[in-house]
Amino acid sequence: MNSVIRTRRPRFVAPATMALVVLVLVLAPLAIAKDKNEGRWIGTWSASPQAAETPIQISGQTVRQVVHTSVGGKNVRIRLSNAYGVTPLVIGSAHVALSAGGAAIFGQTDRILTFNGSRGIAIPVGAVVVSDSVALALPPLSDLAISLYLPDNVAATTEHTLGLQTTSISGSGDFTGAPDFAATPAYSFFFLSGVEVSASREARAVVTLGDSVTDGAGSTPELNQRYPDLLAARLQSGPGTSQVAVLNAGVIGNRILHDLVGTGTLSRLDRDVLVQSSARYLIVLQGNADFLIPALIGNPAEIVTAKQVIQGHRQIIDRAHAMGMKAYGGTLNPVEGYPFPGLWSADLEANRQAVNLWIRTSNAYDAVIDFDKVLRDPSHPSQLLPAFDSGDHVHPNDTGYQAMADAIDLALFRDDE
Image 1: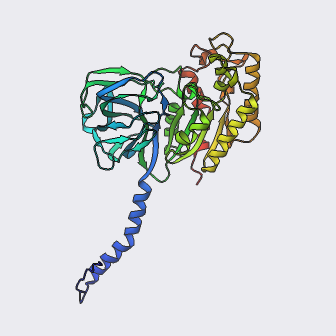
Image 2: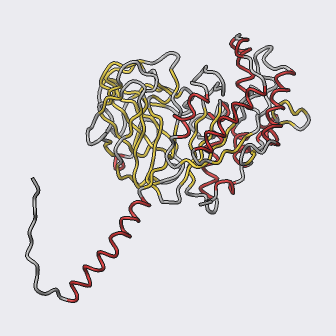
Image 3: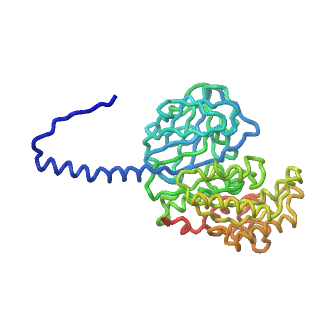
């Protein structure tokens, strides 16, 4: 049944009133367009889900996790993942707030998160959910606390293992809105895979894809000294790049062609890279783990050639380009001296050099970032420069990660639309 609303037509409209009506009609579309521009979502932080080797048990407890953002925004929402769960993951309540250090938050910034208007949600096995947005003025390079109350007894099978940040787990109870609480520390991220902010039309993100070097192994915990963090800081101070977010899709031990500590890159590329909100650029730094790990785990069936790794890179490039992203290739850092007998060999070095030569000369990538040139010892090019070595001869220290971030030309991320 159709409903008709009848109104009485006025006999006369004052000129001033008519002018106001016209002004509203003219400006309304502009206001709507402005709102659309300001409501663009962009990832400001991410961590790639992994299957926990030894999942911790969480039962009727609150988990408060602190993340270091890149760009700021006026509104915030989060992504939660049950990628490796075997049962639905029940979230009883969730909050966000600016971190005051440790398990403490600045109470005046505390915001309740909802999921389609509900305080809780059950995340299906293998699924991702996105919270509703909340108004929160989030400055760039902030420490944001995300608190989750898990009412059921659950194994944290989905984690990001190398957190490099203390996660606080409460005793029994919902402490999501508490200014502080007594906590047991953990050092991974659990179920949390992303934080997004509303930003301007110019906002865009670069995703850094890689293994433990991208993940920040060897850097100082709590200080956000991973090279993607340091790149984010540079972008904030660079002319024309303060609206560029940096998302870390590094996973310790990650390989392009096989699974191990985390799903292999070609299998996780869509989930961890290509679906990131407003992602426009991709930095790839992978291949060393493909050469190193078969000997480490004693599995000769997974030994790969430089040609196979290059083919994997080409697949990454093709899929990124199909999504309209620019792909930048990072050359592989030196690894001689890795403290496991027999892991490094002349053949491994030849493979690394072959991949680097291809990255530098093939023109397959939209640009090359020569991390190898920055990190290597000029007098012994198959080894890290001692001043950049965290001690295991593979992973840089804080100074080395800063050198990596400094080696990236910020012009690669200037607005090109």
